[in-house]
Length: 270
Image (cartoon, rainbow, N blue to C red; front, side, top):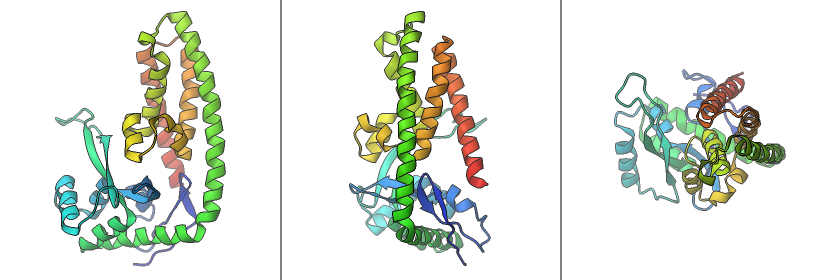
């Protein structure tokens, strides 16, 4: 299988596209996206164990498979992987139609390459080659892309801070007009809800999975996450100014978040 590295990046981090295989060229970055994970007290390239398990078409269920591989090959938590909690995607018409908490294993690329190799199938070969391409590309272009990503991150962080201040004023006016104090936690509830929409999980759990201070969550968000946060806060200001009830506001913000993410995903495919 031949591969070709392309000058692409997602959330400021480089990834490789695969060409010449029977797998859709755009699918690698979507099916097994390589991102930065905080493992072993440092940021390293990593991948979701669940997504890799699905891509490899393993016959066993994820939990049984990953625990067996960890035991078989001596992988170490905190060195090769970390365990995080996430919300499952509801399955329409099934007994599990509501979101449930599930565990994922965020694994280093070295662990990912080894897990792919031992499956001894074409999917495993393709995944391993993809991970190697990502590592090679990072070594070649990391300084330039890191600088550009850092400038872009700072720009989005400033925007998020500005919208954050505006939302604080909007919350204050909303409380004065409606009396909806939410037992004195209106502002913190708004922030937690928006952070959860952006992160896809409860903020303290996300911070714990990254090994960061829960008070510095926004300082550790990606470019895309900060952009979504700024967008949601600006829309929330409008809803607060209109005295929109909390339940209705949450429903509208959730819908806006899903639309934003869909459009961003479509933009990445173009």
